[in-house]
Image 1 (spheres, each protein chain N blue to C red):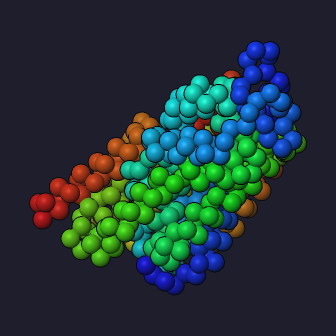
Image 2 (image 1 turned 180 degrees about the horizontal axis):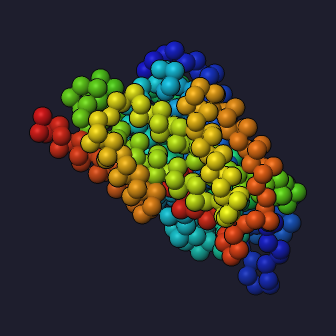
Length: 224
Length: 175
């Protein structure tokens, strides 16, 4: 996967600049950090359900309103966000910010994207102290806790569906998932279990056994 | 707040946990459960509470890290948690932009496995969160029902949390 080649004449976005970019547009005026911050703050404060659920809103803001990217650029970045070691949504923010304004853009985009949710979570934990949750609101906390445990198990199952492999590789993958869970519950440090699982999977599960006709990485973003 | 976890630990663990978000999976949750909830530094109920809050608030779910950081080390902990998730994200984004073509075969190779491994990690986290709650039969059935609705029927997590909150408020009202 690589970023798309230069856009056709007449369809250039306003900004396609970053250090080392292959298709900079010398006529474009770089987006200001303030506009980058405003756009990502808006996305961070108006979207629910993860990056895939918000894909249309993101496209409307970054492609159609700001014209910083082409739609296909955004699609590549949405998939790339799955490939980097970061939560998907803020990974996308980092990729777009870096593409538009380099390192400062990346930091500003991620910070602005994460700020609304972070502030609201912090306000909630400040306003509702643990004593209140453990006392009068204990039933609420327990019911929400049960919902979260169910949500985690559901997400675990959902993750099992993401790798587009079938047959023997899928069976191996399922075994690896079970082994990672069992090893962790048996006391092996989670990180060690995960690294061993990744190593075993890299050896045992091959790319050639991908299911045909599937786009890898197109999850719904629930777990991001 | 437990105060038993240093600011540096908050920063380092969350920074490293982001490595397990490869492939879009929320390995961060599993790492936090393993490092802080299981050893007793963070109450399982509070952990579940901040995860629930992140589903009730807009934007990326990573916002729950600020709550985790706050419960572990107050407001400085919350700040450290946020910075710790921003740094690897920006470095990864820059690295991916430069090196994507060259690293693609390696990343794809790992990525084929990522869903399975992260599923195992999240399942362990779910079990680790549920175990201290000592759920009764009806609560276990509720967990199974939610897992089925989320995993098989793609129920929006927002509705799961709102539903849980509604049941909790009804429970509290009836008591």
